[in-house]
Image (cartoon, rainbow, N blue to C red):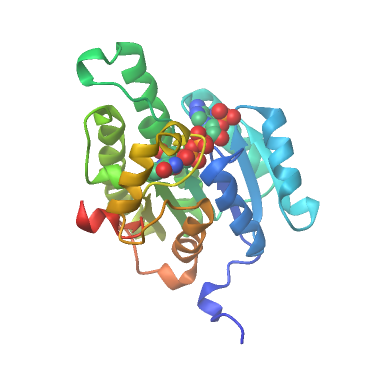
Length: 256
Ligand code: NDP
């Protein structure tokens, strides 16, 4: 049995930000396995080269692009370079992000700006630069990696949740403005996924057990759990889906 043609995204070109490890790397691998040409972005050239070497497919379909997604000048140069070297972008996954945990009363100004820049401003900068080209061409798919914390918050994580809640509304705003030009913009909201970002939580026995107890699926998420949602949102099967956040969280958002 073959997949329905609506889900065929082979031959498209996708950029994934923060793709050197974790969720970004898993999504880049999934897109490569689906036949896309994939560009992995990050700040660490060595890590990106090692990550790219792990991906399947012809080497001429796997590329890296080193630029800092928080810096407007680097982003503009980076996207221009990617389109010149690799070709027109069909799919953008805004995945780069950080988590900084501390109570609000102890949260430093510099950390507030860093988390906003990395988790929210980056999606505006990279999204705007990609959408300038996509809207001109009349098609494109942008997927912003939101979070369970776009909906709910716990003590110690308010700045992170603020960035992810705002990213949800930025997704809807992008959908409203770029939809008429054929660009669909959606969010994917992971639940608790085992990565470097959540390592301290996974290693905390009590918290790890709490996650398993509170997740209807009864386990932590794996990065591969997120691939199907992104492939769907990147495909023609989702051509009339825009401004939505698809939570891939083992059901946790529904019960918290
Ligand atoms: P990781 O820390 O494992 O990976 C984050 C990646 O982002 C790194 O490869 C890092 O690369 C990159 N990055 C960070 N800052 C920048 C920057 N300024 N420019 C370019 N790249 C950058 O995190 P995850 O894989 O766990 O998370 C990925 C996304 O998923 C994030 O947006 C996160 O908020 C979101 N998410 C994660 C969840 C989880 O449970 N893990 C749950 C919900 C959402 P480098 O430092 O080499 O540049």
